[in-house]
Length: 306
Image 1: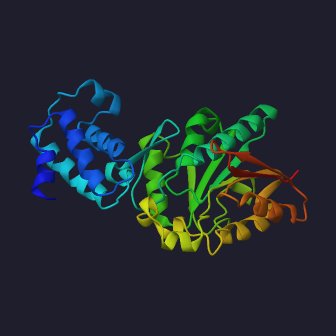
Image 2: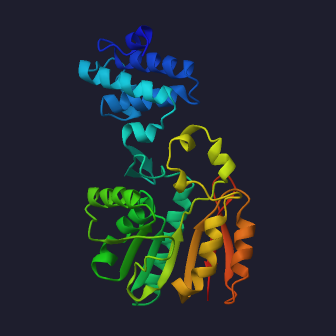
């Protein structure tokens, strides 16, 4: 870091001055949201949130923390995502541990988690049967974690069996760390394998399959900027049109799901119609619908076999 940049985060500087200096550093580096990122990193150095930072502009940072902040700013200036620098992402009111072992949870995936929670809740009140849910390609475990926290009691009473799988053993390690951080280590069955191969649930069939598979086109991953340049490629790359893995998953759903099972699949912009056609080509003639995210994009495809 250049001397003038180091001076901007000198330990004698107060919180407000640190934010101003950090913003200037990140703006010169071409970071898209320099002020927001500066506040997040300065707040992290104080181990406080942005609201506290705004209320305490005269707070002073310890020298050791100022040195660490300077290193974080240098990393961010090179493009490294905030979530990897801080080691967590605020997502669905949860703090998800994040690092380069897995994709950073996206805001749009909150819709997938909420849809899964609604689906499970409906089944739990419908009858007394145990609900079997499977989060495929779990990554950091964010979706499975949201489900496990919502239905902690149902899991304890064995009304819900929840499994999470991933092709990456490293991603599963991160997911396990997220479950352990919330006291859920024994609540989710983890399995390592490709798509529906692990057989993670008793009996081999699920009532609900939730999947956020890689759906970014290869060319976009190749030229990707921002977090795409830092995240694991196999968690992003869905082939030439982004649909390679979905083409493998959808035809296998009738075998992996119970006859009245449901699959919830997150998709990218413009992909819902083609994924819906894949589902409608299944011999079981499922009911297909979509859920739109806050931007109006058809983000989740719901495939109901019954």
